[in-house]
Amino acid sequence: MSDLESQGQKLEDVRLDDPPSGWVRTADLLAALSLAADLSVGLPAEHAVRSCYIGMHIADRLGISAEQRATLFYAELLMDAGCTAWSSQFAQAIMGDEIPARRDFFYFIDAGKPLDVLGWLQQYLASGAPAHVRARRLLDFALHGKEQVREALRNTAEVAGCFALRLGMAKAVQATLWSVFEQWDGSGPNGTSGEQVLVTSRIVYATNLLEAFHSAGGRAAAIELAEGRRGKSFDPVVVDAFLSLAQEAAFWDDLELDSVWATVLLMEPQTPYRFLPQDKLEDVGLAFADFADLKSFYTVGHSRRVGDCAEAIARRMSLPEDEVANVRLAALMHDVGIAAVPSFVLHKPRERLTPVEWEALRLHPYHGERILSRVPVLAPVVPLVAAHHERVDGHGYYRGLSGSEIPLGARIIAVADRFDDLVNKTPEHAAREPEEALVLMRSEVPSGLFGHAVDALSESVPADQPATRGRGRVGPDDRPAGLTAREVEILRLLTTGQSRREMAARLYLSEHTVRHHLEHIYTKIDVSTRVAATLFAVEHNLL
Image (cartoon, rainbow, N blue to C red; front, side, top):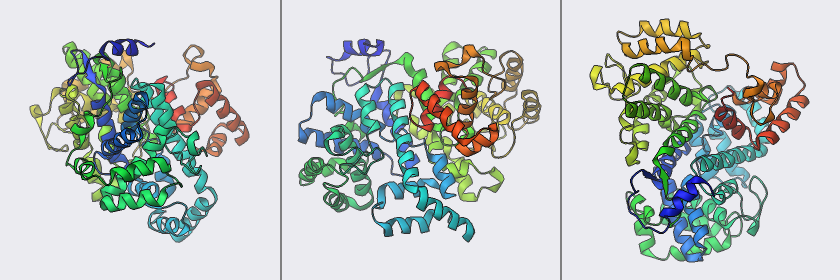
């Protein structure tokens, strides 16, 4: 039994409305992450929470075991935790805003109906591109679209499971998330069908879609979907339980409250996973960091580096230890609101953004504030996240604060964020050397950046070299899981979104050799998808 399980076991027999001293309510953290995921998939806030409400009522109606109910509760909240995993690839494939495109493809069209798919392609695939480019994209989708969709779902499911592991969830939750896109008729990404699919996965898959249809079209739309997919993608038993519930006015009344979270919180089963030790917040911060950074190839590992850099600055400035901890945690979570910004926008140089795209980017601190405000223990962190793009002269965003109106921690994070931006490749520029970045930042001190924090950074860079990426080789003692130097090199390229063909050309290898290396890498690090391999590289500081 893990330390977390043994600590949690002491609380298992005590029903508490609030976490005991030194503990955090896990569901609050999962609800915040689920809200970020709702924004990333383009669905109304609390989609996952309402799905959980439906799922727990179905579980009651089916009489599943207490252990399965606990698994279902957490899996419902984490079902889209991997949704940023394939955002960059999807945006590249359609050459446009992937958020509405992905929402409509996975929720509101029937992929088994050619006319539905054709309509989707006409609306979203390379919609602003020249005719010959659209033609190429259409041909590529015709040839490879089905497998690309399967790969996207596998990556999403495996990464959700990785986050469940990070947050201390039981293995049954991870297993449920791995199978969350499997369908009753076997048409899911792994081809598992019928009762071979975990009952918890069958419930989560159905409630995910039923809630989306209810939010978009009301009760009748959800009922029609359930009846139409009974025995096809949906388990007939799950559908029958839902249709039985749908006859009860009270079921709908609670679901349709402005916020159903208080109701769902009361549904949480008694389990050792209900509370998380407060000293595990670092792990939570890292999970939120990676969730946000997977939105773009350019930002993989960004929030972790900003967290390290901001902590180094705070220590150089001799901040009290509790403030240093808050600055680090806020820095790890500072970009969680990026979930609401399309990857397509993140891949564009800022000077090419449209006014609408710039407004979406400008509001990401607002969304971060909104997401993290759900968690009471994060109250000291929220103002720092909300203000990390404010400028000393008042020309920052999203509130336009100036000078001392900006919390000190936010001013520190702004410096760390700017430094990491400059020393890494972005859509606007190539990576700069640290000293060159510091010269540029000093010129920004009178108006944009906080001078004392820049001075502290300047003092720490020679000794600590924070926030640099991909500078130097990883020695044998630093290579985990028995990876070779060549395998680390290939893993690094994989994190940038390059195809096997592109990696082969870069390394002067055959595509077959690269494929062979990737198979070995996946086996050694015990993953099965590209994005899970990317998370491994980030976790083990291989970038």
